[in-house]
Length: 83
Image 1 (cartoon, helix red, strand yellow):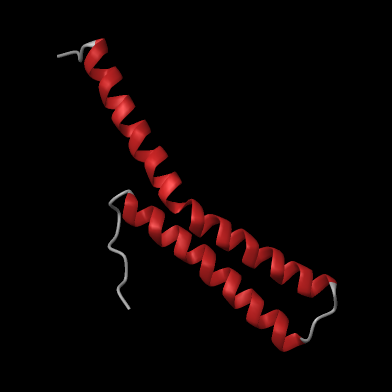
Image 2 (image 1 turned 180 degrees about the vertical axis):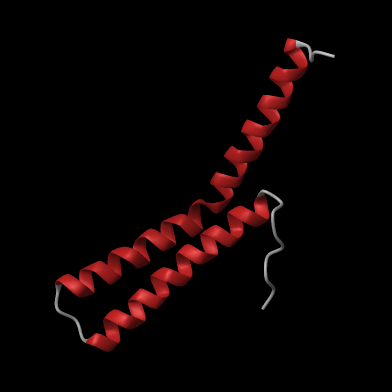
Protein backbone atom coordinates (compact mmCIF):
# COMPACT_ATOMS: atom_id res chain seq x y z
CA UNK A 1 0.00 0.00 0.00
CA UNK A 2 1.18 3.50 -0.80
CA UNK A 3 1.02 6.23 1.76
CA UNK A 4 -0.98 9.25 0.86
CA UNK A 5 0.90 12.46 0.19
CA UNK A 6 -0.82 14.08 3.18
CA UNK A 7 0.21 11.28 5.53
CA UNK A 8 3.81 11.45 4.34
CA UNK A 9 3.81 15.25 4.67
CA UNK A 10 2.50 15.04 8.25
CA UNK A 11 5.11 12.45 9.21
CA UNK A 12 7.89 14.54 7.71
CA UNK A 13 6.71 17.61 9.63
CA UNK A 14 6.61 15.66 12.90
CA UNK A 15 10.18 14.46 12.34
CA UNK A 16 11.28 17.97 11.36
CA UNK A 17 9.68 19.50 14.45
CA UNK A 18 11.23 16.82 16.65
CA UNK A 19 14.72 17.41 15.25
CA UNK A 20 14.31 21.19 15.41
CA UNK A 21 13.13 20.91 18.99
CA UNK A 22 16.08 18.72 19.87
CA UNK A 23 18.48 21.23 18.36
CA UNK A 24 16.84 24.17 20.11
CA UNK A 25 16.81 22.36 23.45
CA UNK A 26 20.46 21.39 23.04
CA UNK A 27 21.60 24.80 21.84
CA UNK A 28 22.89 25.95 25.26
CA UNK A 29 25.00 22.78 25.48
CA UNK A 30 26.36 23.37 21.98
CA UNK A 31 27.23 26.98 22.79
CA UNK A 32 28.97 25.90 26.00
CA UNK A 33 30.99 23.28 24.12
CA UNK A 34 32.06 25.80 21.49
CA UNK A 35 33.11 28.28 24.17
CA UNK A 36 35.10 25.56 25.95
CA UNK A 37 36.88 24.72 22.70
CA UNK A 38 37.66 28.40 22.13
CA UNK A 39 39.12 28.71 25.62
CA UNK A 40 41.29 25.67 24.96
CA UNK A 41 42.58 27.05 21.65
CA UNK A 42 43.13 30.51 23.17
CA UNK A 43 45.21 28.98 25.96
CA UNK A 44 47.28 27.09 23.39
CA UNK A 45 47.81 30.24 21.32
CA UNK A 46 48.72 32.28 24.40
CA UNK A 47 51.29 29.71 25.52
CA UNK A 48 49.41 28.68 28.65
CA UNK A 49 50.84 26.16 31.07
CA UNK A 50 50.65 22.48 30.18
CA UNK A 51 48.33 21.90 33.14
CA UNK A 52 45.95 24.71 32.14
CA UNK A 53 45.83 23.58 28.51
CA UNK A 54 45.13 20.00 29.56
CA UNK A 55 42.40 21.16 31.97
CA UNK A 56 40.72 23.17 29.22
CA UNK A 57 41.05 20.28 26.76
CA UNK A 58 39.28 17.97 29.18
CA UNK A 59 36.50 20.52 29.72
CA UNK A 60 36.03 20.93 25.96
CA UNK A 61 36.05 17.18 25.38
CA UNK A 62 33.55 16.64 28.18
CA UNK A 63 31.31 19.41 26.85
CA UNK A 64 31.16 17.92 23.37
CA UNK A 65 30.49 14.47 24.86
CA UNK A 66 27.54 16.00 26.74
CA UNK A 67 26.18 17.36 23.45
CA UNK A 68 26.52 13.94 21.82
CA UNK A 69 24.90 12.19 24.79
CA UNK A 70 22.00 14.63 24.77
CA UNK A 71 21.43 14.27 21.03
CA UNK A 72 21.45 10.47 21.23
CA UNK A 73 19.05 10.63 24.18
CA UNK A 74 16.74 13.08 22.38
CA UNK A 75 16.61 10.74 19.39
CA UNK A 76 15.83 7.79 21.67
CA UNK A 77 19.06 5.91 21.03
CA UNK A 78 20.37 5.73 24.58
CA UNK A 79 19.44 6.76 28.09
CA UNK A 80 21.19 9.75 29.59
CA UNK A 81 23.63 8.64 32.26
CA UNK A 82 22.53 9.83 35.68
CA UNK A 83 25.25 11.00 38.05
